[in-house]
Structure formats: C-alpha cells, structure tokens
Length: 291
Image 1 (cartoon, helix red, strand yellow):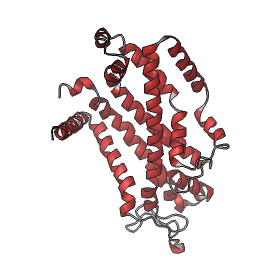
Image 2 (image 1 turned 135 degrees about the vertical axis):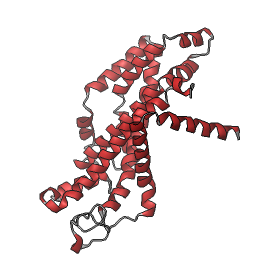
Image 3 (image 1 turned 120 degrees about the vertical axis):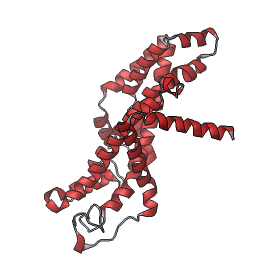
Image 4 (image 1 turned 30 degrees about the vertical axis):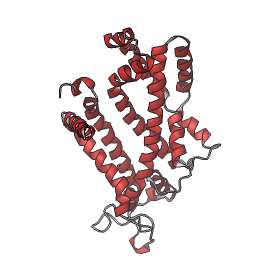
C-alpha cells in the first residue's frame, strides 16, 4: 500500500513540476493525445480498405475528416492506424541508442585511461560515418522488414553524438563533492555511476531520448519513402511514399492525401520537442526535493 501511495505521490510531483512550463505541458498533453489515438484508436476506428471510385480525392467532410485517397478510402483511418508502427520503431531506436550512450559514456568518463581511449576511438569512427547514407547502403544487403529489428538497427547506429555529450556531463560531475564523498565511503563504482552520476544527468538523458526519438522518426520515414525498407503495414511513411509514387502531387484535389501524414509527423515531432521543456523541470533532482 505504501509503495502504491509513493508511486502516485511521485506521479503527482512530476505533473506539478511539468505545469510550471505552460508550453511544455501543452506539448506533453499533445503527445499523450497522439499516443492514445495511435495506440488505442485502431481498436475503435476500423481501417478503411474498401475501394470507392465515386469518392476519389474527396475534401474533408463530416464523413471523411481528412478526405479520401486515390481509391476513395478514408485518410483519417489510415492516419490512426499508421502511427503505431512509426512510434514503436522510434521508441525502440531511441531507447537503445540512449542506453548505449549513457552506459558507455559514463563508463568512459569514470574509468578513464585505456577504457576511455578505446570507447572514444570507436565513437569518433561512428561520428565520421554519415548515418542516412550508411543506412541506405546497408538496406541493400540487410532485409529490414521486421519492425523490432529496424528499431534495433537504427539504435545501434545513432548513439555516437549522445555518448560524447554524456561523457562530457559525467566528466564534470565526477569531480563534484558528492562523488568524492561516495568514493571516500567506498560505495563502489556501480553505486557511484548508477546512483550518483546517472540521476544527476537524468534531465539531460530524458531530453536526449526525446531528440533521439524524433531523429528516428525522420530516419525511418525517409527510408520508407525511398523504398529502402519493405514495410507491409500502412504507416505514415508508407502513406507519403504511396502518394508520391501514385503522382498525387500532380492533382490539386490530392493535397490532403499528401499533407495528412506529413502533418501527423510534424505535429508529433513538435509535441515531443515542446514536451522537453517540462521534462527538464520534472526530472531535475533539485526541484523534486523542494516540491
């Protein structure tokens, strides 16, 4: 019972801190709304797969909120069903890249010596390789038709910049008094890294996670748009790709067919980026102690 009360108290504190930044809190609410629509919406709104030749490229109406596509199918239902896969892949990629960067960036800063040299050498090599061209080349040899594998693949190649930033933060923190006190008490390296350094970098880590999330969205949509990733489901990237290949840009009535998935991606990205303003407050350990 006490654990449950502690959990709800922590959630309440987090939400209260997030409200201090109005724009960030609006971004948080928008992100939650998008997640609800994309994750729960498919159970309520069926995907329109029926061809209706008499309703091709219809403008938005009470029946079709975002109009119809080249086969008369409802675009809004495609938007609802198309967000889940995009968000899932981006979340897997962001989580993996952040975990790699935080673990090895902190280890590099704390251990120093040869460990630091090896880790930073590998990181520098990764930084010199442009991500998207590398993914385009590898997609020709590796079949990226599994969503989880695609997320892992993106995460394994997009951690280098964050690792350097985490290392810089850890180098600054490891000279602080609380770290020296932990060393004097002989609490061990694991305790110092995960109980002293990482919590004090949590604000930066969470913000970096959201930035990695948005980058992964753009990367996977770009790969799908170029036809480098065979995706069976109709996600937002597939919608843009299909609109392009079917020549929708040449039809004035097809504007909603093109702009709907682009707007969905842009709104999701804007919401997540804006939300970081509140997350910076919510995960600040100093603020949590005074609220």
